[in-house]
Image (cartoon, rainbow, N blue to C red; front, side, top):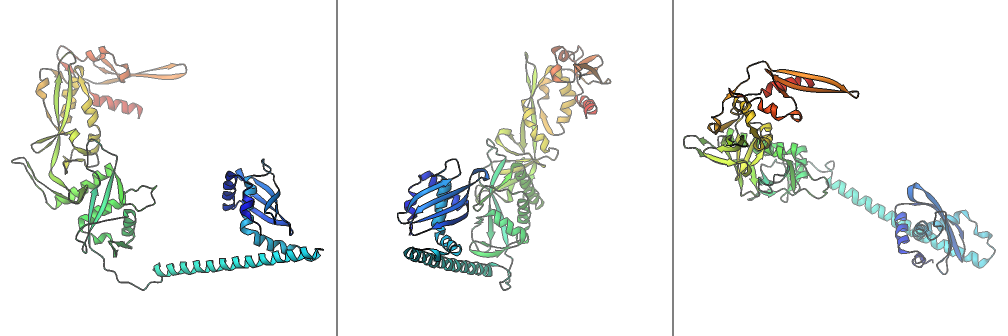
Length: 499
């Protein structure tokens, strides 16, 4: 019997590792014994190499001393390579079957040496016996696997189970934000946990695999929750929970790289804002909170289904509207600018933007100290997205006419404006003439170049900021007052030209 462990000692550890991998991946093909005697065995095979190459290998082994007598491979190493190592692993696994196959094609009766003939006969008989035992064990293993598989299918499959009568369980939904809504760290994605209120439990049950839970809800399938097999569908939940769960079904996201159960789900910040809006509208409709305008008292009540960090901390809501307020601040010469300081008004309270968690969604709102507030209906998502640039803007004196005559009346439609008296000393004039746009086209080195400017009754100003000079700005400051640029009409002209 050949000691293959001894033969493997002729190969380095790296070659053995690579050869074993090749063998396990099915890289050895057409292996067969081409010579067998009482002294030696010789085998050949085609072994897969890199880049779909195949190498022809041959090995001759002293079957008494368990030593390699000779070996060749047509790869660049010629011998002692990973391809020959793979063939050794193959021989170790399949030597009996290969011996039986060899005996079918060779006539040992023609061997002259009776001792040699008897030895080969014993070797072949032993190989046949070993292979039969291997085949029997393999057959038994296949039968066991078939039995186990059928057992599981007959147990689990709904095709083979008797009809069961399921009573749809009643449930309520808790959606818990895993972290407090910190205005200083607004993440674009928020993690949430799902908990269920079930009749047979005194405390809410945390859903251990939200992905599987939502899938079972969606397809109305039985699932195991809290140690019980339950049938839950959307209709199992109260009205508020049903609507909130339906929203989560559409917008929940999961970490695709994780195969383990999803204890948490994620939602985009904008979608969380829409979720808060949905809860707010249901709560207001049920008249669970009121705003008393007489004494500016803010009265709040819990939002349905929404919690912060744990179920002991429900998120409240205020049924009235929150308002933006812009305070005009005048910066004295030499700069002579106006800046706008936005804040939020809730009843008699004034909140700073840095202290609230804004949701810039279709119906914007914000959370402050565990309470959700909605802005007045005129405020849309686009307004919140432009707050930062408005706050960073400094309006210079030449644009005071534009600011006071045109921009400020529009701003008043969306916010309360204070501090106008700080710039009451400036006289501004609306532009009442006909605004004209002029375009000069030239060709330079085969390319067209266009220069566009606007004409305010002889006062010309370039249409692009890169062409602006100090004289263009000063031209709007006249003895009568500061004339307004009509930026809205300018934009209409540009849109008509280039859209």
